[in-house]
Amino acid sequence: MYQPWMPKWVKQHYISYNSVDDIPVEIIERIKDGFSRQNSKNPLVSIVVIAYNEEKTILKSLSSLAALNTEYPVEVIVANNNSTDRTQEILDRCGVKSVFQPLQGVGYARDAGLQMAKGKYHLCADADSIYPPDWVHQMIAPMEQGEAICTYGRVSFLPDGNLSRFSLAGYEFFKDIAIGLRAINRPELVAGGASLAFTPEWENKSAGERM
Image (cartoon, rainbow, N blue to C red):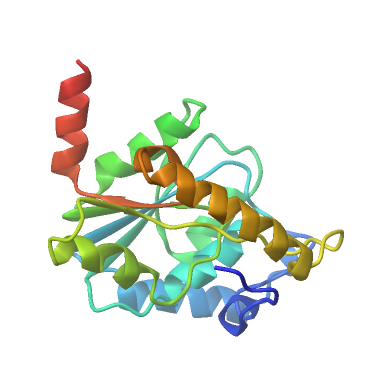
């Protein structure tokens, strides 16, 4: 969606710091409290986040995931893909469930998290992404209603000081047109792991068909 400015919901999670030691305690406590209230022992939705050396970016993602507003019982699992920085320290301080995967690679990391997932629906996320409050509902509702067997979301980019949000939005406008055209005949080619939902039975069925 073309949006030349940064939404308000993004700004509240746009946490910047030079060192993990500089993260305010109140932010850590807010995120920890959010996960404590949100995580279910019997989740319908398992959110699996993959992370590799994300100590400077993962707090933004965790902040947004801890603030999700959803009617579905959820759990959040972070697959730490052999990080050598202080990513794991942040995960522990924020009280989020995590698994350490020493084998390097997106596939290994994602699989480690999915193996722990208990939910009927698996929702994939990335540690360098910020998610809107209604993200779970938007992704899961079509599957719950029998309208889809898999859902995916598109991404927008955050300004980094070199490019403005306005110029990035222009790039995304034309990118989304190209994605929309490609999705007409091959929608599976435009589904990205940063925002992807599916059910384990379809994952297992697809794996069986490849064997």
